[in-house]
Length: 335
Image (cartoon, rainbow, N blue to C red; front, side, top):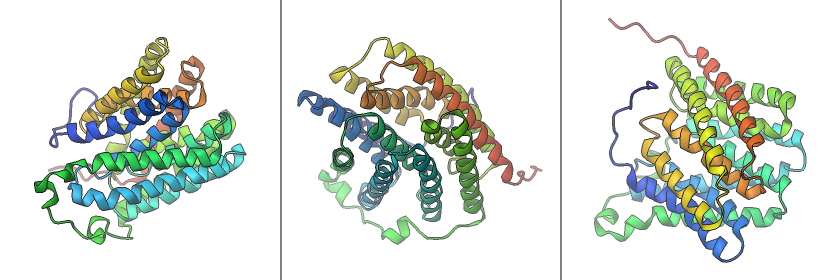
């Protein structure tokens, strides 16, 4: 995974990219037209549902994605409940990170692993604590977004040839629970970076611990290899710094309403096209997307202070995630 080369293509990505783009753009556009734009920004987070099991058959995704949506909603509910206290949020970050990692690795969920459960937890706590959206309304909007994204992902089932594929049992799709040696090391890494990330966050700013931990968990990923840890750390650092610069340029345009929906959809589409081939390039799009979406939901869109904070948080988190890769044994030398 070189900074200067693309990984081989693993097949067409545009169907998943289109689903993810619609999942994030349509709720914002619809709720903006109805005069409730903040609810659209919350519902757009439901698009994270379709990012899982992207290579599986649609009939198999039909069984996996509801479980993913349930996990995201549980993370959000926990975030909402903990939002009244930065200390509770910080403790919850550790619990959600370790819990979601145990489930993701124990049942072979695959990429993107526990990352979005941590981010949804943190975003939920942050938005509810800093905006006027009632907790129940927040959860209802997110649930509606998850349901819409699921419906979008299931649209290929209108084709007879797609429905004709035999669905596999859930136990075969998500084997477990069991943790092999690699999975145990990955879970240990997540636990370590979660605890250390929270401790560092309490020193920097307790309200930002979820971003530090999320950045570290993103670097841990789902690959059990020391080399992969350092490579993802380098990609994370470079991609986020460039992405923060892109966010600054986009924020100067003060996107809102339908334009913001279109912009976020375009960013999400770009992410899904390149994420499996070049992680750093994907981060160039992921960073402004998350900053714009969070800023829109909290009324802080365009804040350069937030962008700088995210760079610092990512530097800390990526360094933690990369350093935790030392827990993996060195790869055996090639003959």
